[in-house]
Image (cartoon, rainbow, N blue to C red; front, top):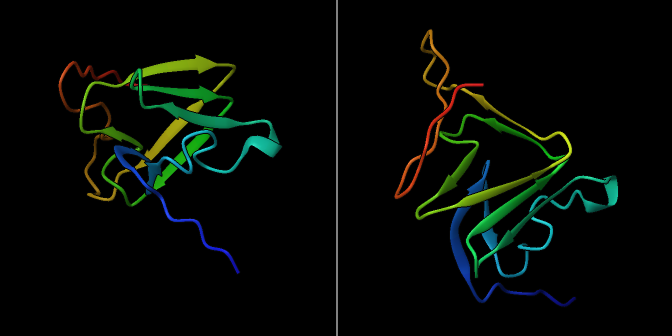
Length: 103
């Protein structure tokens, strides 16, 4: 059995999945289902193509420790289940050049 080991871990997370050099082309493994999340580390661009991201118990649905551009194709959703049980949903981005926007 051959096991591939990532050479590079990027400071970008989609739900509870940390993006690596091995997963950057199909972060969630959904390409065969017609939905993709891909990351270009050279341009710091996360591309969502008909992606459905559900974050259960995580603090963020999408997270980057640096500037992150997001490209959208089709209809993509990012849902955050607020594990803090507050009355208001938690949303937004954090970091240099970040912006927050409610759904």
